Amino acid sequence: MKIGIVGSGPSGLYLSIFLKIKHPESEVIVFEKESKLSKKLYATGNGHCNLLNKNLSKDKYNQPVFMAPVLEKYNYAFLEGVLKSLGIEVTSNGDYVYPLSESAPSYALYLKKLAEKVGVSFLIETRVIDYVVKGSNIEVKTEKKNYVFDNFVIATGGRSDPKLGSDGSFYGVLKKHGYSLVEPRPGLTPLTLNDKDIKPLAGVRHKANVKAFLGKEKIFDENGEILYKNDGISGIVIFNAESAIYRHKFPKDIELVVDLFPDWDFEELVKRLAHDEGLNSKFYLDSYLVEPLQKHVLARSKGKDALCVATAMKNLRYSVKCHYNFDYSQVTIGGVSLEEVDENLLSKREKGVYLIGELLDVDGNCGGYNLTWSLISAIIAFKAL
Ligand SMILES: Cc1cc2nc3c(=O)[nH]c(=O)nc-3n(C[C@H](O)[C@H](O)[C@H](O)COP(=O)(O)OP(=O)(O)OC[C@H]3O[C@@H](n4cnc5c(N)ncnc54)[C@H](O)[C@@H]3O)c2cc1C
Image 1 (cartoon, rainbow, N blue to C red):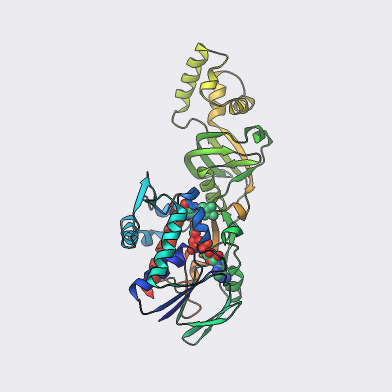
Image 2 (cartoon, rainbow, N blue to C red; image 1 turned 45 degrees about the horizontal axis):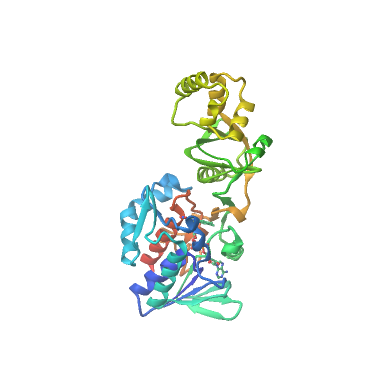
């Protein structure tokens, strides 16, 4: 058996290793246009590589209906077992799971060396420009020469920072082959805001609850640390809010509501503010908020009494302008429609062609859900090959 895989990201890399371990006699060639394998993997999890999540809920993905049976079959225990079978030990922080080294570069290197050891062949700096299905073979065209395979797996990822390899250029090839695409949009990015009064807050961090509304409909509600920027707002909770918003095709009237003290209900916060103001009316807010955020809250408060200040603290409303662009996106929302593949991720359109990883219209929240999908999609295709 001769299998070609385009893309050495985690999905292509995992699949190549599974195949060579199970079928040592087969030839597995991975094409990578960059000079380094799996470039994006090095940048994951802030350099720590958040590779799985213990709470693998379907609702963390844009495709809950598709993911429900998939996650039932490939649950956390199963996936951890698969990694262990490859010699990968993990550690966790809450639900977030990392390689024991907690180092993305070490993890990427480990996978590369393992792939080489089991006999995967890599063709780096080799861009696949097209392919042709000819009877039961697939001819893969690169800028240098052509190769013929029994099966061809497309694992070219989505679109994010092109420096990390994800330029989205393979979407064009697939469009030419007739595949339908759900319009790719940047996912897990900061948000720009229309509110000009946030400028002085740039650099300020605070733990908060964030809700997102499209018109009157609440579509997101999560706690986490926010980070104000010159033109908007960032932080993991905001990345997740951004994805929740832009999974909607044409989101309109987008509003964020930030509660700076979600652990206390309104009455409790009023009681505490009133008490503390009584003790030191001049500087009691110093124990609640850093100065720029105090000023921001007071400027938005209808009065200086505890009731008004608590109302402002629990209801900072921001109007969302847009997401940041693809250079900042950690995952692509959209991609090749799931309608184009069967339950084995085999193309319904072209014989012997599989599509895996972020290339497909599957995106997850921050927290390891996207690398989890890379792994699961590689396992699904592996089982069918
Ligand atoms: C900064 C950052 C941090 C992240 N952190 C996390 C995290 O901690 N946890 C998590 O779950 N997810 C994280 N992600 C998302 C995760 O990295 C991706 O979802 C995952 O890498 C997708 O894997 P993939 O194999 O499908 O595609 P990719 O990793 O994008 O790999 C695709 C590969 O295909 C190659 N390629 C493309 N076209 C061609 C061609 N024509 N010819 C040859 N080669 C080609 C590309 O160069 C690339 O190497 C992060 C993303 C970013 C940008």
